Image (cartoon, rainbow, N blue to C red):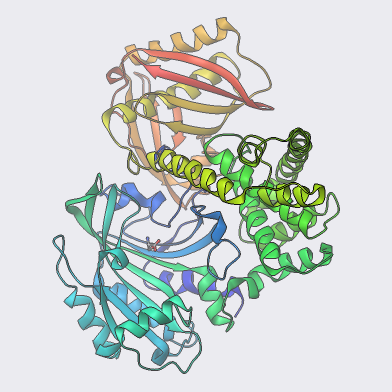
Length: 581
Ligand code: SER
C-alpha cells in the first residue's frame, strides 16, 4: 500500500465515523511564541483541547505536518526524521477511551476499510499509574474485550505512557500500539518486549492519548474542563509497516528522493544519502511555510539543515546545483497533497541556492582561518566549518588535531545552546494570558492600519506574539517613512480610543474569502472557519481576519499602541515590532 493510500484511508475511516476533516496547519505555530515548529498533531489544536469550541465540531481528523529537530545526529538511522506527517483523530470533549481504542484497533486490523494488519502481531502498552492518575484499568479492559491477550498488554510508567507536549498544556495517560516487524516474534515478557522495541523488532505505530489533565511548569495541576482524545499515528512508520520495511527510507515516501540522490552520487554511503533526503525534505516544507534561513530560531534550524545537506552532498560528490534535483524530487512527491510546495517552488529553490552559496563562502573563510592555524572549535562554531572537514585538511597537511579537546568544548557549547532552546518552551503552549491576548488584538489593528494608511495591498507574512511585544512581518519593498509610522500609530490609537467591539463569527471558508478576510500566510483552512471582526459604531468592519483567537472583546482594553522598530528581514519583507504601554 502506497503512503498516499494510507493517508486517504485514514481520513475516510474517521470521516465515516462522524469526524470532520481539516487541513494540516502550517509548520509554524500561529501566535505561539513558545515553540519553533509544530512538533505534534496536537499543537495547533491546543486552544480546542483546552475548551474553546472548534468551528468544525467535536470530532476532527487530520494529517499534520510536524518538525522535530532535537538531535540531528540521530537522523540517518531507521526511525528519526526531522519532518514527518502525523495522522490524528480528535475528540474535543466528545468520545473517550472506548471509541478511541476500538477505532484504532479497527482501522489497523480491518480489511478493506482499514489497513488489514494482523491482529496477532499487535502489542499494547497502558499507563501503570502514579500520584497523578491511577492504573489505566479501563483501557486494559477495552483492549481485552477486543481480543488482545492480557500478557500482550504492558503497564509502563509516566516516562513512557504519559504524553505532554512540554512543561505546560493539556496532557494525559496514553496507550500505544506496537507491531511485530518480523511476523514470528510471538509472546514476550515485559523485559523482552522492551528489548524488542530497542532492537526495532517491534515498532510503535499508534498512540492514543487520553487528554483530560493539564500541566503547568512541569507539574500536573488537575483536570481539564473536558475529556479529549488525541491520537497520533505516524504516516512514515505505518507506511513502512504496510510495505514490510524496517524504515520509511525504504518505502515509496523516499524512493524518488533517494533515487535522485543516488543518481548524483559518486559513491554510496547510506547515512549520507538519508541525511540529504531527510534534510532537503524538511527544508522544502519549512520554506513553503514561510521560514527563511537566518541566525536565530526557526531560521537557524533551517540553515543547519541546508548546510548539512550541502556538506553531505559534497561528500557524495554532487556537482554544484545537483541538490536542486533533490528539491524537485521532494516537490514532485508531495505536490498533490500539499499545494504550497508548487505554489512556492521558486522561493524554495532560490532560498536553498542562496544558502548553499553563503555556506560555500563561509567554507572559504574557514579555510583561510584554518591555514592561519585557528582552533577547530572556533572554526566549527564561528565559521560553521564541519569538524570532518577540519580533520580531512589536517590530515592532508600533516597537522595534529586534539579531537578529545574539541569534543569536550563542543559538548559544553551544546549544553549551553540546549539550555537556551529549552527556555523557548517555558512559556507554555498557546500563551493565552491577558497581555498576549491584548497584543493579539493590537496585531489585527496594526495590519488594518498599515493597509489604510500606507498601502491597501500590504499582506501579512508572519506573526509572533509574546507577553512583551508583537511582531509582524509583511510584504513590502520599502522602508516606512517616519511620518507613515506615526500615522499608523495614530490610526491604531484612535481605534483603541473609540472602544470598538471585537466579534468572533463562524462562516464557510468560501464566504470568508468572498468578503476578503485576511488569511495567515501559508495556512490552509477547513470548510467552516472562525473569523474575528473589529467593527466601528455602525457595525462596519475595520478589520476582518481568519483567526482562532482569543481576543479582547473591546479595543478600549488595549492601552497605548507604540511601534518600536521597523526593519527589513529579507528582500521584500519588512518587520514591525510594537508594544502596548
Ligand atoms: N500527541 C501524541 C504524539 O505525538 C499523539 O498524537 O505521539
